[in-house]
Image (cartoon, rainbow, N blue to C red; front, side, top):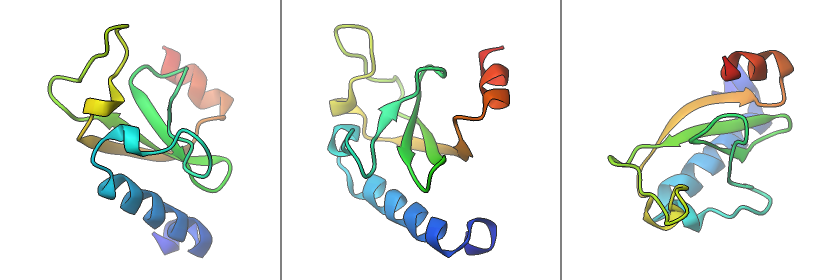
Length: 101
């Protein structure tokens, strides 16, 4: 990781992975800084936590089936498994266009 992302980013990435691993449910990860866990508006079902701006750690719910709340969203209190899918800049306009197709 250090070779790919550098020392500061590597430490942040390790910290976020440890936080996610230690959480009992996704609701345990704060939507406020520093992790700022939230579902991306441009990619349904994909969540992110902040790393070193502009990069984020992206993941999806791995529970099968995905726990749903009454309003049809994902019930974070019942999410106990995730799958990390990427580290990337979600502000990249080119990538956002690709994700919408």
